Amino acid sequence: MPLLLTWLTALLVNLVLIAAATRLPLLTPRGWIHAGALGTVLWGCLGWRGWSLAVLYLAAGSLVTRLGLQRKQELGIAEGRDGRRGPENVWGSAAAATVVAICIALVDNHGGDPALLAALRLAFVASFAAKLADTCGSEIGKRWGRRTLRITDLCQVAPGTEGAVSLEGTLAGLLGALLLAGAAAALGLLGSSAAELSGALGQVVAVAVLASLAESWIGSVAQVRLGWLSNEAVNGLMTTLAAALSLLVSLAR
View 1 (tube, rainbow, N blue to C red):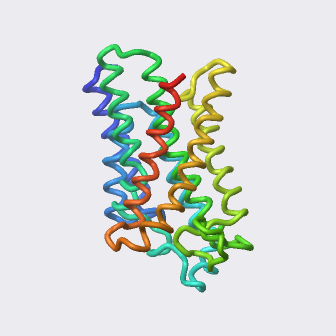
View 2 (view 1 turned 90 degrees about the vertical axis):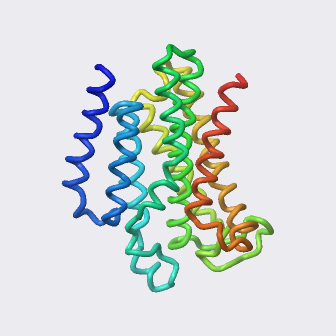
């Protein structure tokens, strides 16, 4: 498909779908506008497969956020706006993936090395897998974690404390990473052969879990001390770390 037609298709598809989806309680009105811009870039750079992975993250992340919402609201540890995400959440979750997607398009359009393209695709998937792992770990841990520990010293703390982890939340994060990685494999973003898929799945999941644990450490050590370090900024750091780690692992092979 010619490049101009690809981008026109991306714009049209996202305009239509965002207009139809604005009534869903997933994003704020401005959040939907920014999600439309994000979706247009991802479709234009990666086609429907990369775009679909981002949509899956949005749907799964929003669903997990709303699980046990009433109880989390009673405890004062629920996400604001009844779980609806704004522009800052959209880009905190997807800025790293967007940069990687643009890099993939640039490399691909200039006849780049297939190995580099495969490494970049893995980095793209890893960034979203890390964010879903973090969302699942945080939301499930806050509601159903039986024993919540601060990651830096393993002292027991209240659910919702910055840098807190729990066994239930960690397992939920692992499942979230597996879900995203499995979806990426089904979409053809992780290779085709059994050996490629096995290695890619293991790499994405491992990197995602490590990055989500690093996010807890950053929250415990830095976020509680630096007022300007918002949750969205920490999310951006985490997803960037996941993409960078995955890229380094791929290139080191």
